Length: 181
Image 1 (cartoon, rainbow, N blue to C red):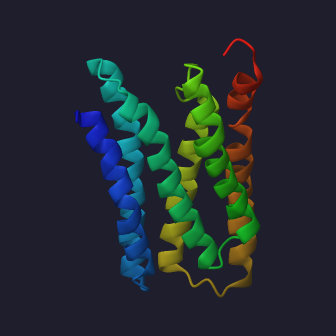
Image 2 (image 1 turned 180 degrees about the horizontal axis):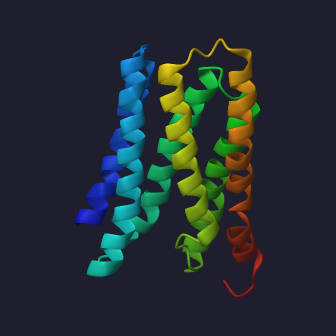
């Protein structure tokens, strides 16, 4: 278990900690949940860089890293929807993307020994998910969800996340449909 894999596992462990912190029910819990998103974003950035720099890219890392990202961000966005800050249909799109990617596309590409490394679309999606998650969870700690304009603004912020999530599937779908894989 190298350092980059430990960072990936840490992100898996951060998901339930985030959930507990968010559900704690007060502003301090959501502020701590915001800090957890920041830590998760940093570990996500570092694990790949460390693995490439040290030449420690492993099958475990290739398989578990995207699953850790999916579990973490699905947890964040379900909490945002449960807090009534975004419509569930937007979160469903994100969840469906993650399930489709993790349970269908990625396994097919791995079986074909095709390149399953993160593409630029996916990296941008993850950065935007991190930023939006931080902004919305931090805001939920300081503003009541009862203001009618909150859902409108948060929905507008979540729309690009859903679009990027779905758009980031394109290179993987193309690779899956390609005869070269």
